[in-house]
Amino acid sequence: MRTSRFIVLSTALLLVGGAFAAFAATRSDGTDARRDAARVGAKSETPRKFCPLKPLVTVSHGPVTPVALVDNGTPGDSAGDERIFAFDGTDDRGRTVHIDWTMTTTGINVPEAGLQTRINNGVFSWPDVNSQMTLNGIGVYPNSGSVLAPSAQLDRPLVGGSGEFASVNGMVHSDHLPSGDWTHTFYTCR
Image (cartoon, rainbow, N blue to C red; front, side, top):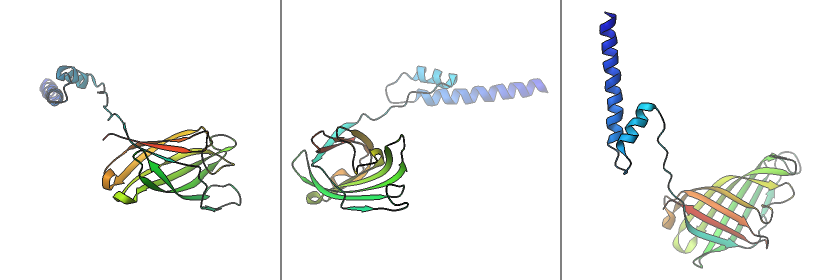
């Protein structure tokens, strides 16, 4: 009785292993199917393929200051403070871009003394073509300032778009130049 159970179990395991090998062998991305079948059998992970990011558009603008600073929570710098910005920039094709930006402070003296973390939500709008792109992420800022320190750079997720930029995703590389000006380069898999 034990021998017949062992044979049934062994056969089932062989069938499952064969199904995994057959699945790996049907890949159509040009990789060696036998190598992938061996990986499945050995339980090693197939390397994940990422979409290479390409620059889509760069937006430039001059120095900015908040149009509103809402001191939520404890008076002075504290978690919950809101900074609200609205300003215009220009893209690398010479088109006007309106930028609406909010920042919410989430931590004081984080990750170290003199710095704070803020969640960012930036909406870049191209009114002439009824298109938008949105970034959302977190950044580290000096406690004493409303924006990144000059010469600082920050990458944040590009979470979507509309119109000309419908269904984009990727990342936005922001660069606060030593002059006080800014560039935001949008990278996408498109």
